[in-house]
Image (cartoon, rainbow, N blue to C red):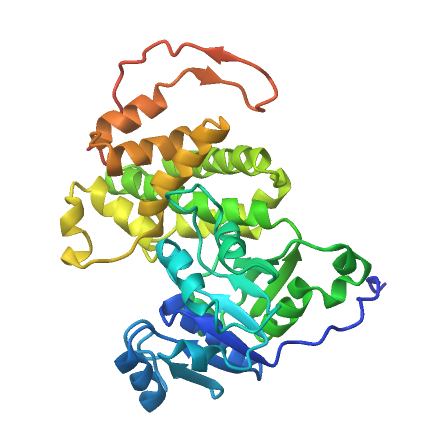
Length: 375
């Protein structure tokens, strides 16, 4: 007996020409997916020599060495050239530079072009989600996000990969969802191993992406300190709860956090030191001073920045986020890692689910975890 699925919506029109701002590993991976699907892609790099090398060699040796890029990608360091004639824009620059990037492209971006964020975080000074930053600087554009459990090299190599494409749905989008920016971008990205899912909960998707980086640093810290799977599973699960509470407080949906952009992304990021967030935490957990991490190289770690912005936002809206607070205290408050995590584990005993209102004083609040014991 064959399984019958409901007929799909009419096929939307994919975007033919797209711009990817940011020629790091993830920006290059997304450009690769789009070009492999037959679309024309302009890949912007802030460095002219970097853009020239990509065009000359057909490879991004700085970030995805050894991988030949498909036809259809043209790199440029000129923003006007990158944006000329584009039908959709993906921004993959660091979250800390997003506002400045939006200000730079404001005179150049065609009116009404959809903008999808493939960077994650909360703006440090304002506490705004990144989509709110874009809407501030570039009004009149649909703003969404592409997020999920995606390591760049595996995505570029066309390993089976799933992600969420999220945009708020207007009234017209709900009448004709197949023509929404989310559906059109999902179709544009879909092909080979890359499988997108469509969401209208942009807040939930953004919160998951920002918080997971901070929780991944916590997992790395405890892994580097010698703890194993029990500890990692506890941090992932309670980290998801922190995501849910913050998403709900900001108007997102709790169930979004259990999907690809929340639990999925968090699980991947906490599973391997391929993640810069996990790697930074792991090095700190081993006792390596922050300036010496990554062999002293100046590596941007989004969770390090988000540890400040996420906890500031959570405090502002009254959401308890003890894991994120612990990471913040170690990275930015001068707290001792062992003392901070011992205090996290000795917090009052709470209920699960959260709806059961219960808080019991821990019977041994001064007991330290057994760091340095490896079996």
